[in-house]
Length: 162
Image (cartoon, rainbow, N blue to C red; front, side):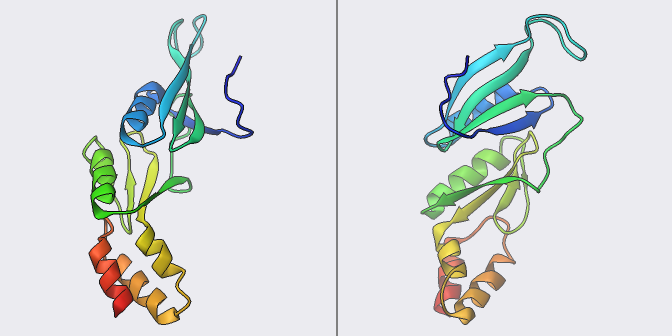
């Protein structure tokens, strides 16, 4: 029986490494932990008794289930976690944790972990600039962001000031 009482959980499909991914997220992000690990009670197509089937975990307070379903449904940019950061140090720490652990950089604050899950490491200064009531501020912040892989808070702040 599940101990998760949240009304919704994200089910994330992994080839075979849901437990490793959950352990990485728990070690990397605040308010994250690994819960129940459920194993196959007998052999099944593509697996054996004792293989991990699902892993309950929480990432930044969001309940998730990692499902080891095989390679048929890989992650894509159609889904990502957007993580709001306050400082450049926090932005860099999370970015480096993902990229340096077999992940890959992308553009505009996006990166991908080694399991193919996409992350947006987004400083609040950027989201605030994009929501600024002055369209000129939005434009400058957007144009600055478009030149970046990892978001540079000082460059966004400079763009906001004009």
